[in-house]
Image (cartoon, rainbow, N blue to C red; front, side, top):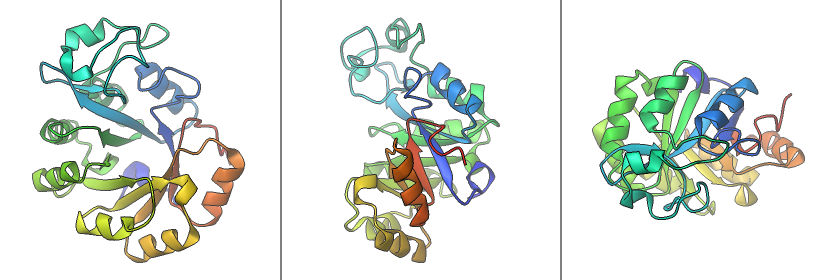
Length: 229
């Protein structure tokens, strides 16, 4: 991994500076970069009319003033909603266009059917070296590697058991586990097999320092200022 992922320890902004700004919005990503974040994490889903938008939940209920499934709305309908502080749900292309060259991207695919367009946008914006595509969904990761073997992928898991083997079988370079289940042994096993290890979601400074001390390669946090040192 090169570019924005060269650092020994990465602080990855979870949906941007989501502790301080509406998550997964341009405002949140901009704030994260202003706070010194070198990598932003975001979530991708597909609209009714086939556009890729940046939103975490299956529905818009929690993060906007609307209701209903993301997949049941057109881009125009989604863009009419307030995602907080007057922000709109951005498209993946819009995020890339605004922040390419300013940060790396960890793109989480939340559903099948988003792989081809995501890879196409990565290529179109020249971001292969600046992106890691991650997912809980193994089929998504397999499809991304089939479409473009050069794109780095990462497997997200909750528990650490078996995650190293699963990641290797999928051709992943990264494994990301819930921080509550991160251990020194898991870090050692993953790194011995050539994997980078990240954990989510860490918002306590002391916990972040402890994880850094056992050798994790990065933490995903809602607070880009979690570990300023």
